Length: 343
Image 1 (cartoon, rainbow, N blue to C red):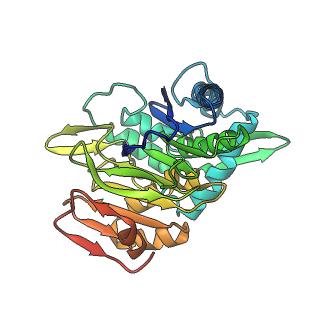
Image 2: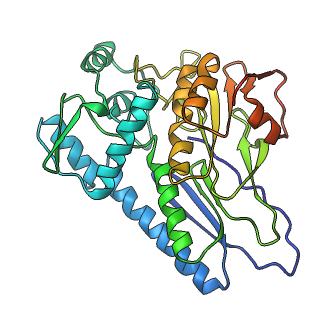
């Protein structure tokens, strides 16, 4: 997860005041800024969005004992079928499609691997999982594609499958929130859920929303970018949930292929084009680019139809396509920048 900082711009005195509200869901901070005809409308719209996010947080929390997802994971561990709610069924269907599209570099079925590394806890110890535990989980090869459906019920192929939608729920929720705001009559807003951010319209003065991309080793913006209506930006980085042991950094981004939590890349930011799943793509697409690395990042960016991407490798060097290069405004420019072919 990453923190995208909204870059505040001075507004002229005749412009309406923005309505801002914050919350904490999906284990991360939520920031909502919107403009409305009046503050009462703004408060109702923001309150409805945040209430829905809070409900989804309780429902889809991977390690809370009283949510739907926790109950589903208990059923999977026992080899029992389950009936998903409409929201969970949608996440599973979209997750299966994106898992296949990413060649398995993104998979919501590796919750047991996440737990083995200790990242299912709000606070975690600097320890490595037991090698035999990792070997057993990798041998089971849990994949979301192995969920079998019939008559509205689902069952897993292996009891090693544990669902964790931490790599897609924030972006999926962005798309839901955007639809809610538009239905409520809000056409100018910026929503940030733990570093995944989506824009609605423009600011009242006609300028686009400006956001910053955090430097992975400094607590400030590395670059800024203007978002068009409906565009979404997301970042996956090794600097939020991580620990260091023996001089090495291990982060919550776990490679489904080998169960490795080594942080070989510092961060990946992706720009999703406007569309019904723009928020979802801004969350998911950063993972295959992260695990594929600089050599194959452009291929996956093209496969997901991204509007741009930026990768900061383990040495702090930047890799990006020409579309992103044309839109970025550097603030802390890397010493070495590699410009690739597409996009």
